[in-house]
Image (tube, rainbow, N blue to C red; front, side, top):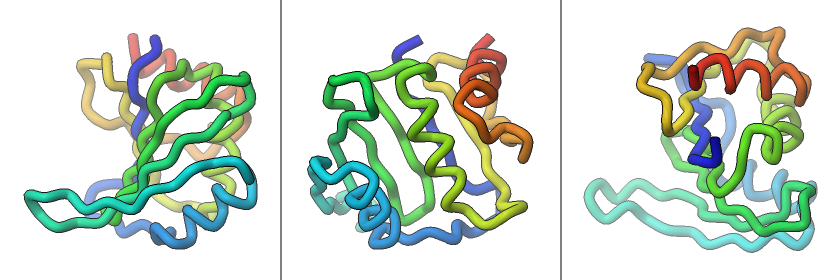
Length: 130
C-alpha cells in the first residue's frame, strides 16, 4: 500500500488543532519542510499543503485542512508511522480520531487510544486496509 492515509475527527467532533498550530508543530519537527497555504475553490475552506521527509530520505506530501483532516501521501504506513505517532501525541487524551486508507473499501475507522506507537499504527492501518 502506498496511497493516501487520512486521519480526522470523529463524526460530530471538532478537532483541537488549527492549521497554524499544525504548521508550527511540523516546522519544529521537520525544519526543512515546505508549506503552502491554499483554499478549496468550491467551499473557500483553507488548508495547508506541506512537503517533508518523514525519515526515509524522500520528500513526501501531505495536507491539513480546517476540517481537521490530515492526509499523508506518497508513502506506506511504515514510512509514515513515526510521523503519525508524533502527530497523534499532539492531540489531547481521549480525542476521537478516525482513520481511512485510500485503497480500503471501508468507511473511516475509529483509532483506538492504544494505537499510539509506530508499530501499532502500522498494524492498525494494514488491518483496516484488508
